[in-house]
Length: 366
Image 1 (spheres, rainbow, N blue to C red):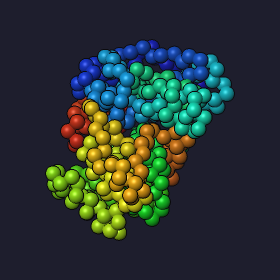
Image 2: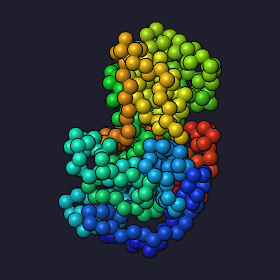
Image 3: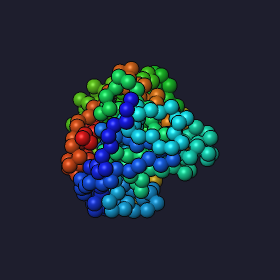
Image 4: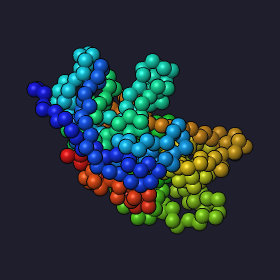
């Protein structure tokens, strides 16, 4: 395929006032690929709650404040339009569709990379945080780490799989829940949660109890949850006792085999451990904002007596991203999303802050 004509300038969305909910569409130079890099003409990018945390500087886990002018985004899909030197062995060619994830590059030489855990590479670069992200029309990616997008799936649907999809898939695997067992998805109607419900119920044979705001009940049930629990119907001052009782009642009277916390709310973490049965696992996925809070109920005594486990799960590996996209290609999962233009991003983040978003928003970068 002949190389397309590449413009000198492009549209991009930056965080113009980090620490606040504010973005701005600007014109930037189109970069040139360096050694081992490809240039990608991005057409779609998902919008993630992680982008919100980066923009507002509310993630204490990040080492430094976000810089003004940062191009955000880490769920980008587009076509390769230029190959830099040293990419001959990558197998990529002009016109191939590829994606950029939260971890935009991994070193391949550290302990996690050698163990197949490149999602926690010690030398990783994060897309949209000090590395230009996917809220732009042209972006660079390492030829040996961009994610191939399979034929038969739309770029808009594929984009959220590059963070939301692979993140919850990896988390469900870390839960060690087996087919036929009960898993609670906390934040089940959100961008991560509704995909987690689908992968768990339709892809892994798990029985799902979805927990979220009552307005998201239809989405959670249609995604495959066997039961929906409206969190707004439970008291906030009983240390989660009523919620625990309800989940245990639904899960054979014993509690869930696993709880995957997809929301960033500290309250969800406080409620998680009591919902487990013996030998159960809580998987921490959503990163709470501001000062981190401990899981109130995770006392050594209760965990010892019940043989319970608390584990964390960041984004998945490169191979898990490919496996997640194959779930999409096979029709096992489907992204519930709406499309927006680049100039609507501030409004999208405002909805996110107010907890009103259902599913995912995907930006049309044209």
